[in-house]
Image (tube, rainbow, N blue to C red; front, top):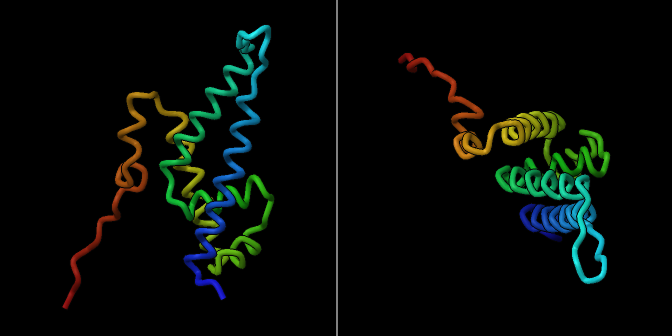
Length: 133
């Protein structure tokens, strides 16, 4: 029987392969008499796919997996929880965090994107009160 980490690696590899296929589909272009001719829509799709790929690469593997399973494959939170051997609330929280991080990465100007990649900017630390003894 495979260990949990081996199963996760398998899921991640499958997701990476499917993402690569999607990116290739978005960036498909036509060859005309030996010259590459790209329409404006194809160039925009290629740029969008590249930006999405860079943003997804910044997310933790588990978060990417939950996003993929939910949005691309259409699994429910209960199914994702069973696949990843986690709770339903884990799936929901990872989906919310991943969506928030992707939105921040994709909507920020290029110069600010690197600053947004740190966890502290996206998820500021919660102030903890000192422990009482």
